[in-house]
Image 1 (cartoon, rainbow, N blue to C red):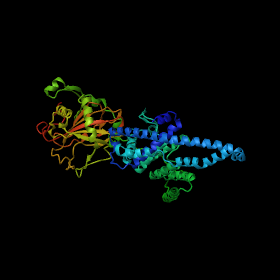
Image 2: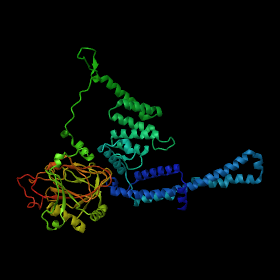
Image 3: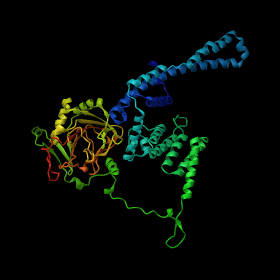
Image 4: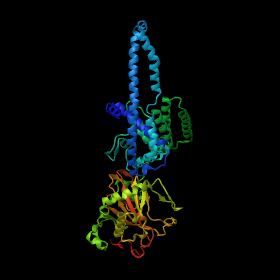
Length: 570
């Protein structure tokens, strides 16, 4: 260990760069070759934290490996200098040198026993024990898989799209103008582009390959990279072609062939692109029109394009509304906020007369409220501690089969905690009953969720629609009448809960809880409660929720003919 420390202390900047490059390669190779059970670490930041422990162990192991290798190289360098010095002296006067019996003996010794030692050392893998360590670590440490690498890349691109992040800014470690980390190298950008290509996402392939090319040209010429300019051009050319730009694809292919004239795929693509362009040219018939004054004809493509009127904001697609709400681009008009109030409530519960809830109205119809300070830090830590060992990839219910399955539009991990497992869980459930005045007998267990890299849940309903006849069939407790969502962490950027139909956004605040009705009093689903969890831009988002069902609520919230608003004055 002392040798390792001394070596690390005197390592130059270039050696440090080499160390991190080797570490990157070892880590990627380990991830790609790992055959243990996949845990999808990208779906929960709580599990991503364990990867730092893995990296720390690998780093220590790698420093040891480099130390013994450096010791081997230092010995060989000493021998080289020794042999070169003797050889130079001998070459000055060969006859005189070899005529000396001592010199003759030493020359013979150098080329026999000495050289055998050098040859043996050159062939010896002095770091084999460190390589064995890595093999052993795979069985005990958490390693990411191919799916994790792809999931992390997709998450980063999801953030890029949702929050309108510039590719160059992301590569510089800037998220919404805030510098969070060190810059990405050209290798990092190239891998982002490659992952996009694997997913047939040619739009992002072009963005990240262009960034990789830009950074490659800026980096020192002697820097070792895992790719070449020709590699970038190949990905760019084909992805550009898939986006419908044949001319640019052909231009980049020609540039690639200038670098690698015998590139087989590029040669074939060049012929294909040229043939496609020729066919398009033959099929294109330029239509001519006369000017109003009867002057020379011009091609239609040269005429001014009539611009369509901008769509009214009410006609925005849900996807666009969702992303605008996540970015904070859609704000409620003051007139929508005028009637909303904050107040203390006790809900007719004797205990709450001493310690009333702090209620903030978010929306009147349908009613959405936020309760402040309803989960304590100590409770949150207990819930997290209980949930972590049970985390599994969060699922959604298949509308046709009723079965639970994972989905790309829900990236998080969750676990379920029973009320009777711990007094803290029991207290939280009782507090939920006090907030809602509903019976918890038919409520689902407390679900705890931790969102991963760019973790999100796209627009959805908490209730089951009529066509989802198999939903909650096994529970036998009817539909989900209401939702209570506890926020167990603050989130630096992103992670809002947004209601796309209402154009409302709830920002995560540790210790608060959101409450809303999913069903009208008639039992019909309230489609205005469609909501989503925005991608987490920076920070870790922890939430827990109670889904409360219809059974046992018949006399607490009976059916009625009056409007929903005001029928349950909290």
